[in-house]
Image 1 (cartoon, rainbow, N blue to C red):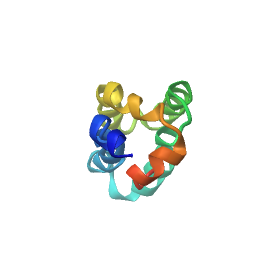
Image 2 (image 1 turned 30 degrees about the vertical axis):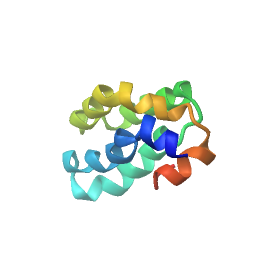
Image 3 (image 1 turned 45 degrees about the horizontal axis):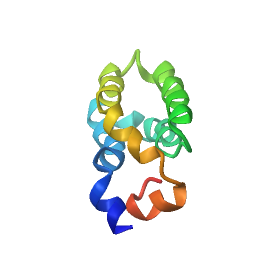
Image 4 (image 1 turned 90 degrees about the vertical axis):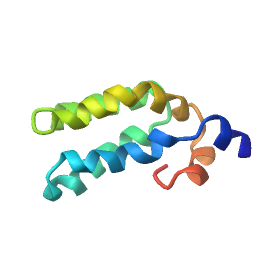
Length: 95
């Protein structure tokens, strides 16, 4: 566990959902968080990408900055997805 925390600190995994909210209207925060959850709880990169495509289809027209934020951070986000959910859960509150 300590090795995971040191080698693959989930900086973007923890902060991406939170950092998405300033780009959106407060009234949409709950809906955005609900729609993002399948992305950061996905079991694989392919599943996360599919869920992100669904999220993008729903929100890109209204909040393109959120989509760009996730696209630019994707390379740092994806390594964390390869770990089992049981390992991710203690490391981040979002898993």
